[in-house]
Image (tube, rainbow, N blue to C red):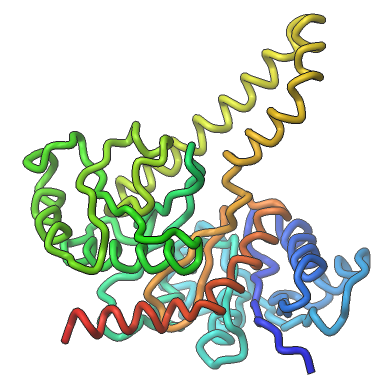
Length: 337
């Protein structure tokens, strides 16, 4: 019998649910034969949408959940009161070992709260960070944290660096990943209180390749493989990154349509340009894992389309195969010991 990586997917969460979520789930199992998707949500809605696709039925299962947590709802209250929501049901499946991972484009707050309360933290992990991959000139870099802990302490950032290093090495295949802390200058004495206090702690870590500070302008150039910061700074970097990227792509496309000459030129460069722009498309790299939990939880953009959902599901396979949680657990226990 086929052994599957079982990924529970919140079919009801996100701006484009359930249509794009279901489409992405179907594309994931069409691309990978080692994945089983468990679509969590309103059965009749999901089954109606699934009727439009052809796929291996053994790789797809519908798990009923009658409630939906909306983006504007207070996360803690929603997790407590909506026990039959797609987010709560999906996360409980991970906690109970019925799923290897959970993917959601739904309420960020509910996913963060649910991850800690329902799935639970690995013993010794102080704060689980959200860690998306950013496209860069040299490939991708991991931004950690981008939204989970806005009031982080130095010890949290040190753990972020360690967990991020493990992720980049074993999931992304980057040997001895370069770790840097976000700062307003390269000098060690620069930065706010948090950065100044964290810098020497990272410098003293023998299990990471700490290269010092990184300024925001160096991030798109691939100045580091793991970019460490607290969530307020990380979220600003992420949102600005996405906004500038979208504007540049729009401007480039618009500029190519301004005259007959530019249109002819566009036809000539289209294949190369398409490949270049694809490498800077964040949706190519899936969602942001919430690292440090007992099970894998991946948060995708609320505006995710099918491609990002598909890639978020597929990234769960490498995470599971490389036993990332076990490696994080070993690292934390070793440092505590």
